[in-house]
Figure 1 (tube, rainbow, N blue to C red):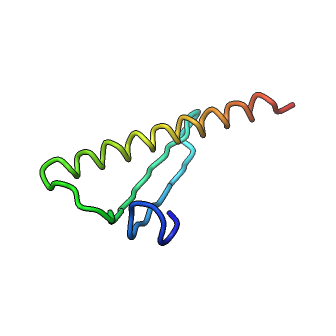
Figure 2 (figure 1 turned 30 degrees about the vertical axis):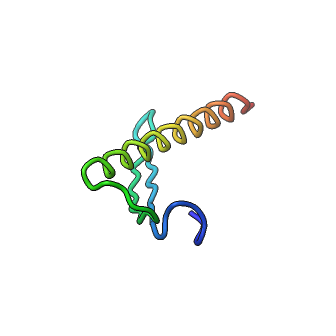
Figure 3 (figure 1 turned 60 degrees about the horizontal axis):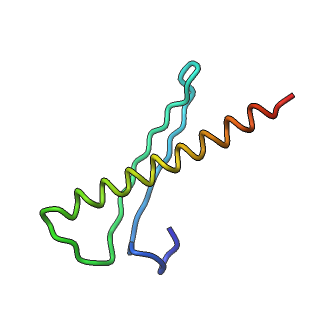
Length: 74
């Protein structure tokens, strides 16, 4: 997040990445303050869904990069 840019006025996030056997465990926590009004009934649900979709897309891209890097090792 870049201060003064985008749709959020404030926010914080933490990524925790840990080895879990043959897997990698990723724990992500975030809080954001949006800079616009959304309806209270459906707004939070839409924001959570959208943020989850962005996170899943980012994780998939990171996994693809990691797999490509692992495949190029001698």
